[in-house]
Image (cartoon, rainbow, N blue to C red; front, top):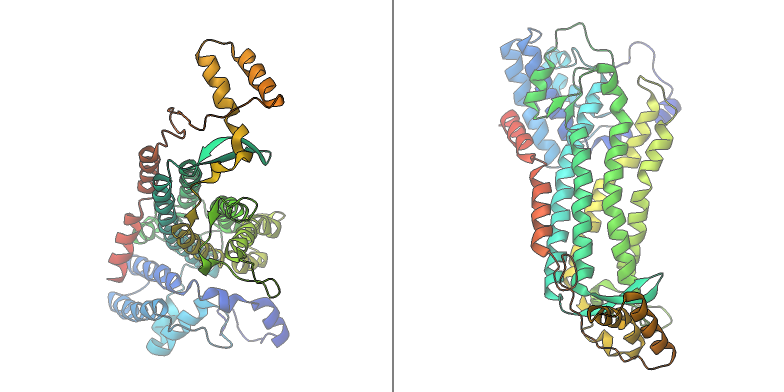
Length: 443
């Protein structure tokens, strides 16, 4: 079944080529296609294109299709082009001609737009929850190891004293900024394109504010041409935000791989997260973190793939946009899996609390000595030169204590302030508005 098919049948090879992986990708969108259609037909009844009895019958069947989609029973049959066609086919089989009325005032162009927006909105919330869980674990570990010192590096050279409190806490705060960016993407997502039809509106007196309210959007995407231009652009914006989270985790994974190696020995990974060698019996390889790093780097490339698909398209709809689905839709599941695994690994990491017993790290306390002399009245540049000459002459003896007290330093991690910042970002998403709207629609 093809919603556009009339009297001429399409060649099978051409059909295979043009449909591609659309049936597979559209399974991600199935429940959201039904939600969009429910809001649409409620609006159609309000402008006289459906009777109240027809609406009640359609809504009853659509709620069943929605439950089937949520519970994994919805399938797109062989020979059916996409999720929109499958839903309409099910309704027509069950209800006859009434099922054919749901497409009035609509195009598959704005159907897929509404599906994608609702899907992205739902998945962004799932990502936010997973990020919050990792954030909480990092903050817990930051406080647990707040007094355990470790070397800090610049240029991969031993530089100054750091701590595991700072190390864990740094990644926690990085996730706050990542969610701030994701919130901006969520605001772009949370605008209703329904009613833009094929990109030029409809002669039916559609009530677009009504469908906006029914689906819990913050506003509509007002200009119908721009609503269609948002296809591809919205996915790219969201992919960039997801890539920011992936970038933070990729850096954490690199640190973990490096710090767990024998040459560092700063942390020990739980045996469950390492694998062995087929030839070297002593090996414990950080495969999970290495794969995490690679998966995160792959995710950071998704915005560029979307850009290359869309960057030379003028306004209006083009079939090129279909390819974005297979690049973009799986990224949410991939990132959620990464976040779950990294949270688990961070929970079971073991920290070496005696790193600084090794004399190779003695010189990282040189700045502490310079600052001590400067505090006693010696000009900083003179103190710097004196300590440098002592190091060259082999006279430097470190005092392995630090007394950093300013905000965000070893002695003042600002854990509570970072948590408060995260809480403010989380409140800004206002997911409850969408929850309430969808609950009312399907209730």
